[in-house]
Image (cartoon, rainbow, N blue to C red; front, top):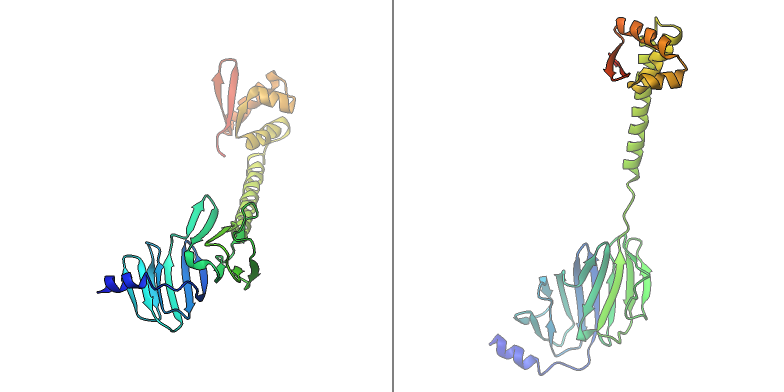
Amino acid sequence: MKKVVLFLILFCIPLVFAGSFEYQIIDNKVLTYIIIEGTGAMVIDLPTDFTALDVSTNYFMENRFLGIVSKDEIEIKYITKSLIEKTGNEFFFISKNDLHVGQSAKVLLPEGAVLMDKYITFPKDYNIETNGKNIILSWEELTEKEILVAYKIPTQVNWILYIVTFIFLCASAYFYYSKIQSIKKSKTKNLYGEEKDIMKFLIEKKECWTKEIVKELGISKVKLSRRLRDLEEKGLITREPHGNENRIKLKIV
């Protein structure tokens, strides 16, 4: 019986009706709200993935076709994902509906979303406003079947995370510097002259070649050899022979 009624409705669709469409985009879903006034019979082709359908009057369903017979104002609500397409961080709202022509429409972008200038919003004769959270595009009387809106949601900077990270890095740098100074103070406490200079250099480097010490501190190889032997006997460094060179390391860091 429903199929017969729906078939009859298909031949009773009025050529003109008054109505409005509102599309509210929430994440990757669109809450669609349609108001139809002064119709006797109508069939609406719903998206294949529609959910949460709510119709203010009696209706018939055949697959995704919604059949309505009413002389009163009709309100239709449903949710769909099929009107949103995504490419990278770019989003496209695309709605194609024969019933758009001659009617008013409104599209509410997600909170924080902005229009992309490199794409054309279609139809072009739209009004734009905001409610403080959402950009709202509206058309008073559509002349096209298709509505296209390109938008993106800018990445929000997490300033709290940046501040916490900065404080952590500063604290780490401070403790590292304090540790180095403490090591310098403890390891060079009873050292003087060239031995003290060599230890300060090794504390900064952790380990190095003898030629680096000669170059940086200006100590001759002969004198450096004696100083390193003395530091090794005091248990402060180790020497690892590598051919004609020695690798000098702090014994305790």
